[in-house]
Image (cartoon, rainbow, N blue to C red):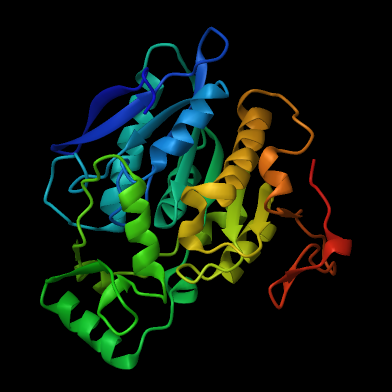
Length: 333
């Protein structure tokens, strides 16, 4: 845990969101800030601090918050509604801009999994947000969700109609929102690595009756640079739609990580590779610095860079049958 981290709160609707503020540890004067949150039921204690500490050390402050009803925030417990979480993002961004020693003109958003979709949606509606990071992003419920058995789908629909709650993670044969093979073990490992997690395996189901969650629709109109970090072997959020969205975005930057699954990015070599790419992106777009060279993680886990394509081009560095095409890898500088 960062010794300089501060516990803060801000209002969202009639409730209070709990957050950690990580002051930037480099340079002086008003600093840029990254507003950060997890996906679905995830909380700030579930390994987001490991990212925020690194960003703060690189000169970028970070505000990591819990949605209402989750973690340490107040509000109806375990109530998940996409529009409600987007309200929390608006409140968090406004609070970040009001903080002392923060440059309100340099605010960026960061989200993991479904939080990556929220970070995109929040930035899309706020023209003053200057950059976005979506890691292992869940951007479209219809095209990215792991295919569930028919009986599980029916059980989940029934729970939604009856206004019941379901497990957030579970086994493939169970009615849970995240039930891809290995995903329950993967997420519980992240929780175990966290800081006295407040996570609960419970979330409301009624939102399934509403419009499909699809912040992917904002990709082509997004006004600011967008870093999309995709795990090539992601079974929770199918990578194809996120890759296509990043390539369609006029200021999209895609990073693809071969051999990496959804929950692998929270520690180990995969974490180091992702964090290195995120810091490089933030330094360019929030600090105006160009950083070249390789990272320590680069020697342990290869990163494939896929610049936006012009019409008719074929993707470079793509993964074929789980193997990286070494001859086609190139870096986007």
